[in-house]
Length: 344
Image (cartoon, rainbow, N blue to C red):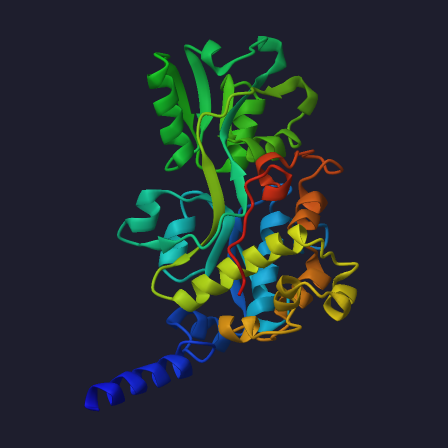
């Protein structure tokens, strides 16, 4: 009987604290007490992903991921402070608590997941690969034709390591031109200080729009690495990790289910699919389980920002200067890699 009593007490504790009523973690408590989410974005700007507009308001794909998280935490997309960080300062800033989350095209790697700072990568929001850009006048069709080239690259990045690996693997020589600041690196390439500019493909597409003559430069077809990009938080706060992950998963699910900013309210009222009803808070307790400020948090996110595809097309798609195709960043039912775990 004593053993049964212990088991019953444990089950009661799990029901009480395991679903929806767990104490918030250290970082989430600080965010809520501060009443603002501090989001590290690529500074000073990265067109399409994060850039201040003419009024100084940050816009972009990564920016809207942070606004979606703010809605989940506060039910308010405006409670975000955007903090520009560089490739070298981003992880120290996160480790020191200067920002709560990075949303700046950071690659998920083993050492970043397990090193002394121990970060969490809750979800992948963009699948990319490292590429190289060259002046069209060089008449180069493949990265394997770049033996002896000078290459503009940022230090302390996976980009720098991938570059060395690729040239070594293909028995090629190169001379690095190492500059930390992305704007300064782009200007060095544009002025002819290096033959090649390497970064993730999407970053190169964005930086090409800022060159003096964008049409005079071509991004070569090879992808010399895998770059799964996503938001980053500190380890030790599983509640915040879960909020970021399931906010991203909700955006992906919304696109898969055909829920848009224009029809979300109608879908919430008329949908019979239980997956849609759970996602939009029409039934179940998904928002409560997550610790969202509003049980219908995804309805607010979609109404305010749209689904994943709408955010992508608005900032990165065919009608933007970047003109990126969906490719791998399409939902799985359309041949892409975006796939959400079941929300149940």
